[in-house]
Each structure stands twice: as structure tokens, then as C-alpha cells.
Amino acid sequence: MKQIIVNAEEISVSADTVEAALSELDYTTPSIATALNGLFIPRELRAGAVLKDGDRLEILAPMQGG
Image (cartoon, rainbow, N blue to C red; front, top):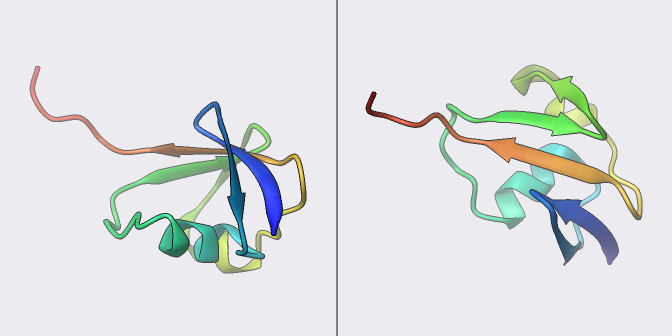
């Protein structure tokens, strides 16, 4: 297990990549944006973006309305 920060909340995950963490955390919608330690991670690179203890993962979903 690793301790990471997801959207400013410290959590434990068993995932080794950003893509696996999204699945583990039930983020299933394709229309989200991700950043790892402040760097944008495009959808096609999430499977190769490796997570380490202490990493900061930001997950942003689009908001509707105006």
C-alpha cells in the first residue's frame, strides 16, 4: 500500500499507476483530467504514470451549468 494525496486528502491505495488508482477509487467517467505532482497527465499516459508514496494526485471532473 502507498500513502498518496488525492484532491488534498491523504489516502492509501494499492495501485501502482494513475490509471489503476482511478479504477481503485471508482473514477470511471472518461471525461476527467488528472495531474500528478502538479503535472498534467493525459488519458493515454495514465497507465505509464507510476505512483510513489507521498505523490499528489489531482482528479478534476467537468462541472455543468453556468
